[in-house]
Image 1 (spheres, rainbow, N blue to C red):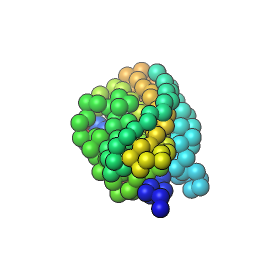
Image 2 (cartoon, rainbow, N blue to C red):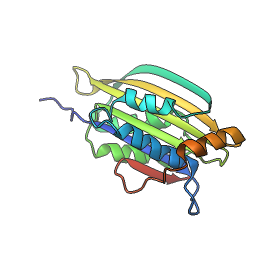
Image 3 (tube, one colour):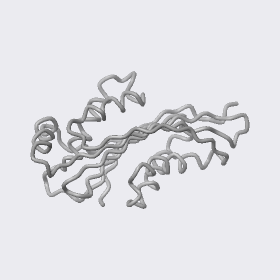
Length: 189
């Protein structure tokens, strides 16, 4: 019997200060990306769909994509924690509870074979850092060996630039903050 639960999961996370009635730009962008990814139910957990959606966010100051495959030997029960570390290793290391929250979310799915995680970090009011991690897990012959293929996309939006801010407001201004969705997490910095 296959020890893997054949599941695919996705999680959207916004990190930032408490908003005083007006949603953060990161919350509006996240809401729009959730809407875009959810348009085609048959592809809403496909990593390429998430990558295409994130790359359509306008006025990215910096952007980088990396891919790698890592072979791991560990009990499969530790897989959610390892996947969470991949997601937070993209750049959100200043949030120690983030990996724990992602790991807790993943534990609900057993041992996912694929996981997409988008983090929008607006800890600083003038910048939004986007970190997208798309992971695929392949089991080995030994039940404690598996390979993790990772594609990570990171980008920065400079909100202090008036043109960028105007474009963000024009494109995402009609979207409200997401709430009460099982695949959305809002964290305070």
